[in-house]
Image (cartoon, rainbow, N blue to C red; front, side, top):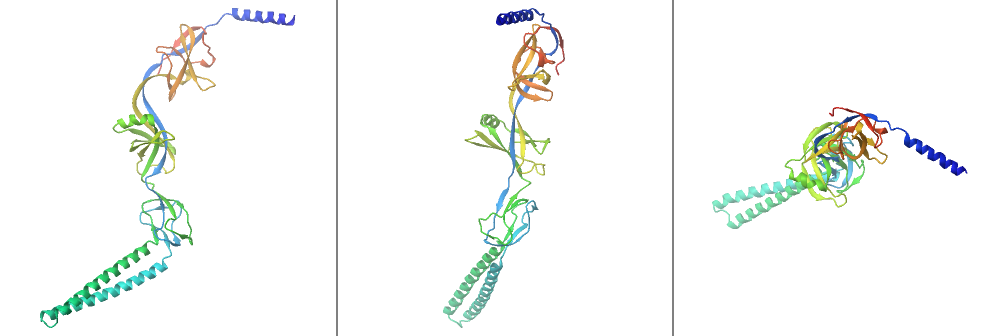
Length: 354
């Protein structure tokens, strides 16, 4: 009995609902304009220095002094670190003494040779003695040359106990301290140039051929430290070798000198591609966003509401570029959150589309 009564009540409610009048609504619409859109490739990369070196000593030894710290700006040729060179200096002094002795012996051999030449002209001495003096002079000259080379070698060894900066830059890291024994493979400092910087970005492989066909691909580059400041720069190099994991190709963009870019930070590059497409542009107010992240718009078609699922391509200030709207559709720009498809439309106000 109860179920029969409930069924009669539900049937009465549905009958009443279906017989209620449908009230027409008033809407504001625009007719979207088609716009030519250049396709853009927005990439994020890392700013790196063209010169980034881990510095090591050219000689093994005990660290005597450290003259710089991490964060210091250094100039090419500036002394960064010295090793204990006591033994090397002693050997240098020995080499200097040997070279001086060889020089004296050569000078004496030269004097004796010149002396016997004068006597040989007067036929006072034999040719054998002249040849002997000439050989002694040549031998002394060879010994002097050897001593001079050994002195230069020892002087270079002493010089290699001093580590200097190979280029201008910033000390990014110091890995040793005074009193440590270091070898020729020990990394002492990381020196990074802050002048010759470049942005490294990964280009998806499907765009590589298009960019290579361009004579001078350009990019609008901005640092994530200051996105308001943009530089228009050319792609310096496209390395035509693809990564097996990401299927991308590396591109380099040389950055201007004395700019606000910092090595290790991220930056953006917007590359304008030559392809052009025609897209519909509508106000953001016309969009209805759904829980799954998709979008749709409503159109007043034949005095009824019709919904179109669309794809948002690009946000342009207060407007968006979209796909999926039939040409000539009147798009509703107000109150679309409460609209449902099939609702009658009574009054349509056309607004100007900017």
